Image (tube, rainbow, N blue to C red; front, side):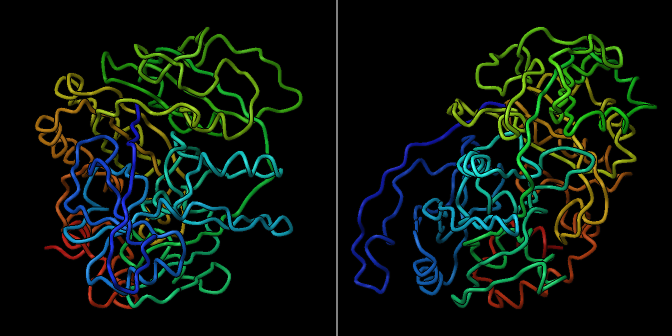
Length: 448
């Protein structure tokens, strides 16, 4: 669950082309993702700071891939040729208080946006477990938070702006573009470089979170959806030992009538009397406040605090979505592998997500239970385990997270994406020559 950032420097590169010196600055950086499990395939990285500079870069190169905050564990953002970092596109463009929306540049991180929204009386409906990820990258991969009534982060998007393969600025909105908009929001970087997003907001609110220890998995058999609905957002953490849920994190709205009184027991689990980390042996210093203490929504929905720099990040992650009604059965199928899984695992987190209308979202027209694995950085062992886990989840038509590790064959994955053919038509419309297509997109969406 620990995170990692990298120091970045840049140097001017004389090009003599229409690309400005500012824009042609290549990042001098550790060319890995934040976890260090992936080394990117090119050192050609460009960091434009305006939409016009994005357009110029896109027009200049035949092959290009957008790069966000580098929190993906697979090659979805990789390129053999050129990467365009959105790190320089990190501004708040406008706040429309009358319509309760905010427009931001794609590279802004949630942690940089949330306090501004709260100061102005607004909130987002959902946040991921860490606030260090970019808005465009999170939405493009259907990254999610938790809550049976909460859609993934991309469901907040009401309008999107991206630069297509021809260098044209494309603007789509839910109000005007209907199903095409639904196809473009979770775009996997395959339609273009996302430069702006407009997000729907709600009035700001306060939250609290309470953590319980050691809940028997048997309690989930008849109560899975009730337990997962017991707060605004609920997470179950387990290392698959002894058919036990190590920790239950319940995040709830703080009502004016609330007190800090904590129920001592929850389905057999006992309330903690101190703040804890999802991995109990680790320090809770960088975790958001618990113990029922009132705080703003953006300091309770994530598990980790933006103010703390993520540390080592030496981990691997995999994650699978199954229909909500099969959540308990899917967990029990995985539990059969506990002897193989536990030695290589830091922790598993189980969450939920509401259904949505976004074509490439695993939640397309179905509410989901989400089973997330944070592995030790033991790649060979993990990559041997993933096919076994995927086989156990096959009866539930599991879908992987687009930014995490998986071994599912292209045929199986494609068969589980209802709107894949329609999405391919969008790719053909906005990127007919495959400028933004890399090996990941080629294999998983077009491979046989």
